[in-house]
Image: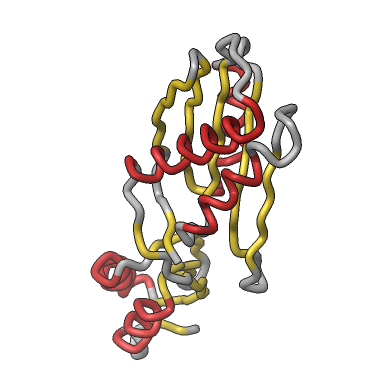
Length: 189
C-alpha cells in the first residue's frame, strides 16, 4: 500500500470544462473540502473519493458524484485510488462546467484522467502502519529520550510532567520496537 503526506493539485481541461484535482492525506479531507468550496464558489461540482484505515485496520472507502450522473465521477475516482493502492488518502476534483456536455463515458474518462494526473504529480510513499505508545522517564533523561526519538523517527504526540516526564509517542512498528529496545533501561512503559 502507498500513501501521501502532502497536498498536491493539477488541472485538466476537457472541452472547455476544467477539472482541478487535489490529492491529499485523509486527515486534511474535511477542512480542505470546505476551503475549496469557499475558494471556488462558481464551480459546478466537488467530486470526492477517499480510502483510509480505521482503528481495526479495515479499509473504509467512500465516493460522491456531487450532482454528476450516478457512477460517472466519484466511483471512477475511487477506482483510481484503489488501483494505485493508495490508503489514508483523499481526492477532491473541482469541476467548472465549460458548456459542452461530455456524456457518461466522457465524464468517466475525464475524472479518471484528472485523478491519474494528480497522482503522477504527487510524491507517493510506501504506507507503513504506525503504533502509539505511552512512556515515562526521569527528568534527567529527557534530552536522551528526545534525541533518540529523533534518531529513530519517533514522533512525540504529547508531553506532560509531574514527578517524572510522560510522553505519548508514535512510529512505525519496526521503529517503535527498535526505540523501545534501545531505551529499555531509561524509560517506563
